[in-house]
Image (cartoon, rainbow over all chains, first blue to last red; front, side):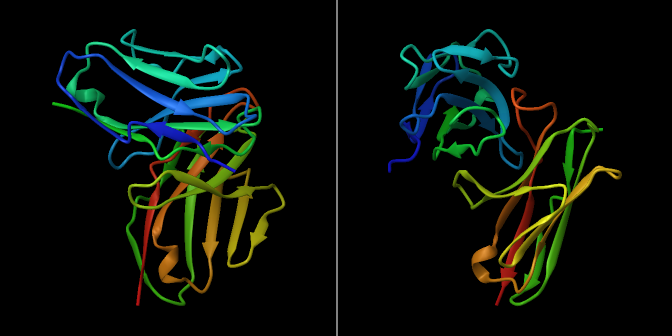
Length: 114
Length: 111
């Protein structure tokens, strides 16, 4: 079956702009996660959805970052007033339920803020 | 002390060699442990879970030492295709707490 998909694969934007990153999880997976990975680092947790609700958003770095999952499937990560430090690969993963279930990652969106 | 620490490497080993990576974690209450593999510019993929009794999958063996708070990954008979970054992953508090990833250990297997 289809895996996790993310669009766009690459996004270049200018400092101060608004961006939206999309994640389409594996069908039937109730849990969806967003991570951010900077060069030379492991993925860093941002936010986790169980169904439509954000169960844990403790990893969001500040209020410029927001994510939604209105119908319990596709999720959008939104970044306002982008800064150069936001440049990273944004990874989405999904799983059947808890964090301890195997998480399947999408290919990521490489965000570059100029 | 970081929650999950790994030697970043790189480990450069010849084909056929045996190589081992260690990873230490700071939270003694950590419940679940995993090794993920990440190829260059690709997404991480689960390699194996790490159980208290240790587990083996072909050429790969993972072990957990709760007393010393470290997990290990042993790769026997290394292949060129094993070249990747290996991420140590810990679930610090149980099912509903986020996974914590180490920075990864880079392995290059050379002919």
